[in-house]
Amino acid sequence: MPIKPSVGSRVFDVLNILLLTVFALLTVLPFIYVIAGSFATQKELLLRGFILFPTEFTLDAYRYIFSTPTLVKSLLVTIYITVFGTLINIFLTCLMAYPLARRDMDFRKPILMLIVFTMLFSGGMIPTFLVVKQLGMINTYWSLLIPGAISAFNLIIIRNFFQQLPESLEESAKIDGCNDLSVFFRIVLPLSMPAIATFSLFYAVGHWNTYFSAVLYINDNSKWPIQVLLRQFVILASGGIGDSTAMESDYVSPPEQSIKMAVIVVSTLPILLVYPFLQKHFAKGVLLGSVKG
Image (cartoon, rainbow, N blue to C red; front, side, top):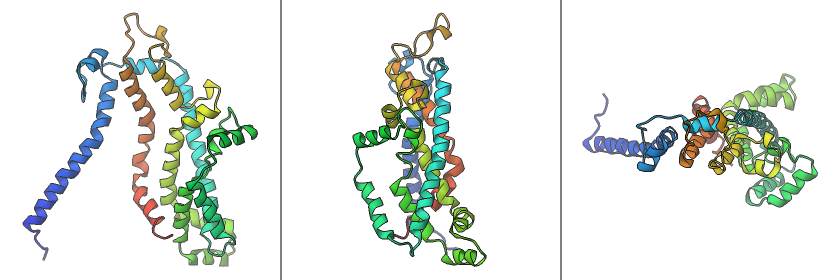
């Protein structure tokens, strides 16, 4: 017979739901405000301090941003960096994490100490720039992919995930004639898809938001990722980085605030669309890899 909840339990549930609803609204309202502001007119933005729904709908900010063909090319550059860079990140991270998860590996602990050391101390911006320059990667996409190819934090979490896989599976595979690489690609990776999906998204978000590295290493504006180009829209809004000749004769340049909001939407929306497809893997992928040390 099911136990009937007490009055105190019901009150707690109601208060808990109300509190979570308030926190959810506080999280969603800024996004609604940014989206609404990007579609608002200059007059409405000046008269109203907070907009959740514009009274006069306009696409001037988006027309201004998309008036240059450079944006499409920059978007393709970012997609290329995100996809190719994420593949490099996941492949190298898993390839390094797997042997470190093997307890019979020689010098495993000293190597792990060196990895943890990089989480506390880095080489710095200038030494990293000099290394990238000496390797001939300046003004190439490799400068955005190779220096941060492996995240020490993600490496440790994935290594912990690999450690939790039953050793009997590897032993059975080796009895059947598999070598270490076959075990890695045919046994370990398929069983690690939740962790791989989770950290693939983490790496992808990092590549999608690449800005500072591109400013340092990419001199050719035709190779700029989307974040750098959108930053130029914000800086040069009054000067007109967009193509004003593509506008109608009565076109009025959108306000700087509206351009900022439109830039946020353009730079955030594509990567947000990826989250629903990988959301179910987040908790499982991260928590399973963080139980053991």
